[in-house]
Image 1: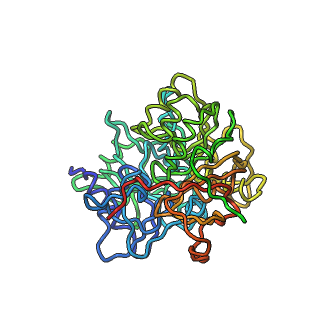
Image 2: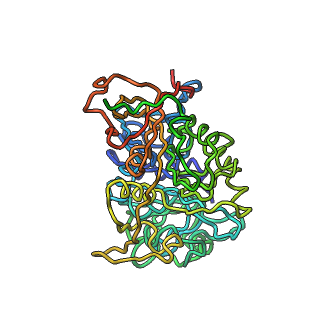
Image 3: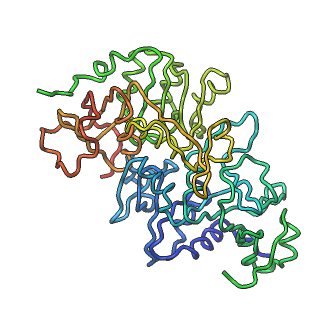
Length: 216
Length: 227
């Protein structure tokens, strides 16, 4: 089987984002999606810190401390982009104005529960940022993650064992092995990577999967 | 004649007492009022409650205030960062209290304080650890968590331009929390790059109206700006 690398997962996510969409890319893996969006599609990136129309990384020497993305890395603004304060920024999120949020995850359950902010370890310093708002607010929540942990355990689970970010919020999961849709009756396999059978994916996954009757 | 201009950061913050609740603008370093924070450290107030998105980066600004053990409690959404070592050390030693608030709830609680709202229901955090012990309600088809406003004694923020009435404009993503913090505090102190004549700011582009501002201090820009 040919597992996808992070850039390839990002490219697969990008394929599903249509012209005209307003999108928030979470910190970490999802930020890779920005560079994979098809040229010529006008897609507007939202950043929690009050930016619509987030552009690429600035050229060396053109960084500006007043212009950051949500990961606090230097960023740029595309032509037509704009700024607003934090309450408006989260009104866009919570008020169901964003078409997509792409988020990383520790675990996603069969019901679409998302765990992505806290490992639950007693000595961990918790940090949540905008994850809980994005999870409940975006019209569609897409998760981008490795299918298995470093120990080989499935991150697609029957019930999340890590603390939840939000319940029943994930619509679609993109991993290095497959694309899965979260439906009321469970997880449907949209596609698997080259050389990976449904049966093998099922063996690796921690929850019963269904074959998708027709492609989404 | 109204004149909110103050000669120095030290003068602007001289009356902050021990135990005050202070909102500090900025998201990481973007919009952080560094000169005012330095003056607050020099001023000496202790046992402060600080409201900010983060808990300080590296050794300057908010991180330095926390490192100087002047902060009793932090309300923020994202304390843990690769360079938040001052907060991390005091938190692990049990010397600083943390109230972790989802970022959108933090923003709305601040906005609510400034807008005279008694409390509000938000879907964010429902069914999670961060809603434990909080009142909830089902409204229509959704479940919500009751959240209360965050009021402050002072807000210290950074803006780009101001006039003597305290009308403000901001620059790029440095705006972030500043406009809502200015509304939520009894006394808002602003560090600005430039002070202009009354009327020089186009009334159509004033972001924070002067009614929300008490004191303005000009501080020469030291940050790195794009050419």
